Length: 413
Length: 222
Image 1: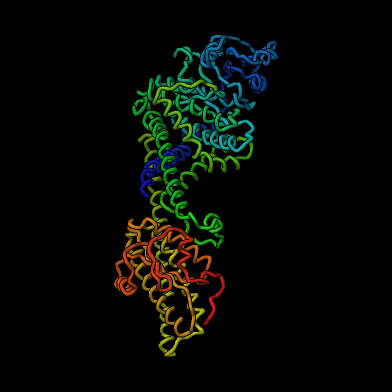
Image 2: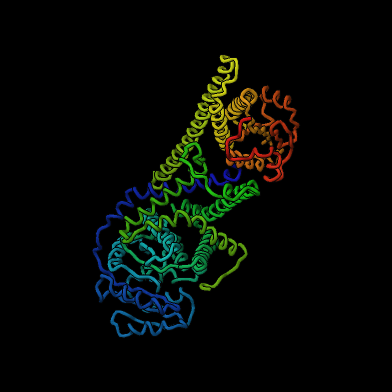
């Protein structure tokens, strides 16, 4: 009971935030965004594909961009080889003669430098980014463009999900990304986004140049740019039907490394240069609710995990101590019997956790419906229910420790 | 009022309603558990009284009802398990739990006395175990001893195990403890009248039982 008391405030906070997302999803601005009319203009667009050792996927990424439903003369694709040491240049060379594709090879300088180099090559009104391990739906760009009809909008994000999830870990990530679709769509309707992800986010080129281009941003240039846009008073929109599929880590280690980078980037940006946004009324819902909640979520997830470990550990040790010397067949095998409601473990703590999980699952299902993403999410929901809460603290703890001691890690490796 | 403020207020309201509903459900379940325990206790109370009355009416032991006495002990054991679970859920200080424990202890003493009477009158030799524990934090081995006894009771259904909270404030129990001469050195066992204190292992506990008493078959009549 003692440990559980610590978790209550954070479980309340989780339920509150999920309720807020659901209510906002049903509010007028989000409803209007879901029935957004087609674009009245057709601006020129450049999609930059920054690559560093992406020989295996860059061709398919480029093919998916060439298949976009958009006037060919208004769409250019810029493949930027950021000093790859694998066969990326050869993979890119396939497109050398394509009239829509331009190829740039530069020394390795990081993703932000590749994006800036791509932007410098184009005069397009809108510039987009597509990570070289991602693939777009052919209608995605058509969904993005109408969001820019509002002159305040400087960036638009897409609806991401996992490309061909294979194992349970990838299905879990797919459910998480689908949760993100609901979250991004809902929060965009009240201008609460603080990240414009690498897979298929678009920007007004003039605004990016006005703000000085992309920065390193603690290895999260997409988050840094979004926070800078918000600080300068621009809006960030979302197109929930702009479907984009991205490859995901297939191993736990790979996932933890990726997310450690994201989380430490978030903490460093928000607690560093963009600290002024947190708790400041001027920045609306982002400053007053989203950023404080997100920071608190990092701490609370770690605390909940520790509480869960302590509770489980204590129960396990007690159970083992009590069972020492008792035949295994009695002590460790279940005693089958008819269901008895009397022993239903329905404590306040457990039921709060169940409500939080069920609301999360409903937000995932909503995300799938809103984005009309094909495929079965069943396995993802299952993996999310049983794995997510156990895995997330791994990178949260690692990232928090990195930020605390000032440790910087390589992008890959 | 801005849309965000309105939504924050609504979300806060939903959170309060959800938390309130959960609290209500948990409270409802706990009350239902208490009610269930009360019902079982009432039934056992009636059965015990019935057996007692049979004694008085026949002026001798109703040996043909020995089977029903055994069933009563089994129901009592199930009640004990439920009561222990409810105690974990609601806390040892919960007034209703304490009241139910007092009633349960009384029923156990009654059943023990009837079992002894039946045994004497009908020539049976049941193995009875009186187990005294404490959950006041002063008995490190009580959980282990309790679990080992649960194992023995499940494995040898003919064992009659009676568990008592040594510190429970109940006149009859304190008198019972005095009559049985049980020292405050817990866990304590009285196995067929023989006293032993402390718990080391299941093997050592089994050695305290009379030879042949730990058998899965029905004890033979003499």
